[in-house]
Length: 84
Image 1 (cartoon, rainbow, N blue to C red):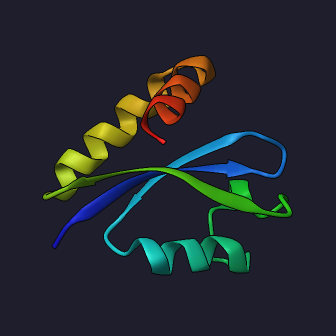
Image 2: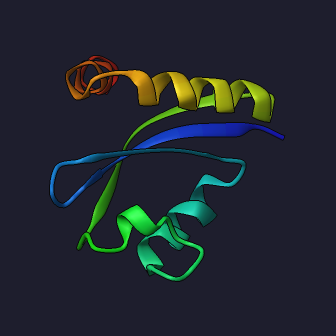
């Protein structure tokens, strides 16, 4: 099983970082705006997947998610831009 760390860009140009073991299902959940979707994302009209990284363990993915969340928006944008 693999784990994906991902970054979404919202319709307001904000960035959301998360991790999951089933990216397709998680993206559907986020866009459905149900109770299981991230509360932060519900007010936005759309989200776009802009970045992903794959890890073999949840522990690695959680550590990377935390590290990405510590970056400034400028640093996150640079990461997204250089790898697209």
